Image (cartoon, rainbow, N blue to C red; front, side):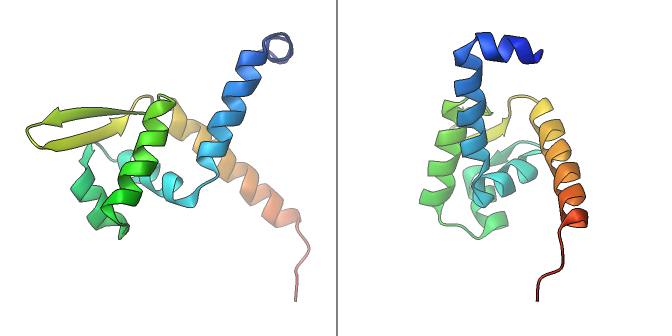
Length: 109
């Protein structure tokens, strides 16, 4: 995306801010990394994360509200998956930036 488009379109800036806010929660990042391996049910996500079902459902609901994940019902189970693999590309870019910043940070005692 061109920087000038972001400056001219406040909706883009708002959406980027909202997605960054969603991604600022470690539980949500953990859920996304699990979903990177493929579709999972809420029960599977509870088991893999150790989080309560209510916490998993709440976080998935927030991510679904911003179109980061999709849901598919099969009987009584709901399965979630990533809407776009590009989200994980963005996460990988962030990890590279964090590695760079950590390398520059002075050691603290």
